[in-house]
Length: 256
Ligand code: 0L1
Ligand code: MG
Image 1 (cartoon, protein in one colour):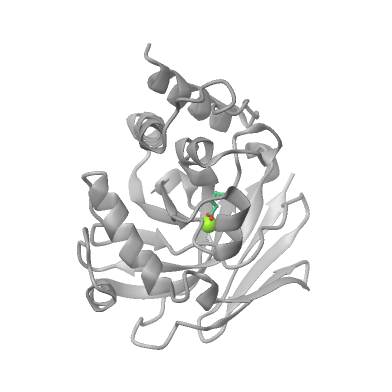
Image 2 (tube, helix red, strand yellow):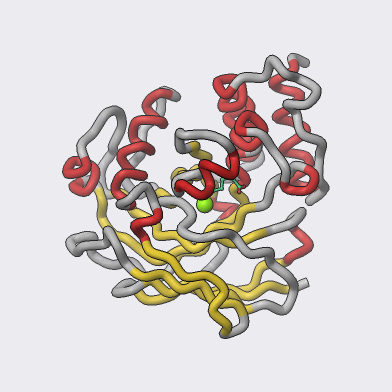
């Protein structure tokens, strides 16, 4: 088995078993971001081969704070499957994750394909709806520590998504207030402007990056725009809610 296939199998197995695995980059200093995206695809292909269905993409490292944290100046992306969907208002099992965290986000629902170098206006024209959303991120690496190459290979930590009510995108969503609550207490506040200054920039970047991989955003795809605040840890017993100005809220609970 070649080394990229081996990394994909290791990361896929770590996700299935909810067991952390060592970082790749400390033992493979030649590992590149391009190879990491190949590992990501190989790993997600294993899920598709087990019967999971592709439902869209997630954008990551979309805020200046996250870019500084990982030491990069480019966004990253990952692939979403139907098995990652957590029904709005339902419970997820903490035991299925290694060390899960939650990010308040907004999501786009596509009504037309989009790929390549597109304008913000063209991106908006391809959007059917927008919704308040949350991403469950769960690095498969020990101690949630990684370099860019590691996290890209690990499907940019993506593990789950929760989508709230869909709304028309014909409104100004460039700077909507965002409140993340856990057990009724406000733990993070932010604005959709934290996503590259305007969430549409994240969709423009998604179209460019998927095209570089020879893919496209499809009608019906969900695109997670990116984290808006720091990502708190999840623990059993919590009720988590993200409320986005004008878009309403989305919630889930955490079981053991
Ligand atoms: O969605 C994100 O921005 C997270 C990308 C990966 C970094 C992390 O796991 O914190
Ligand atoms: Mg995210």
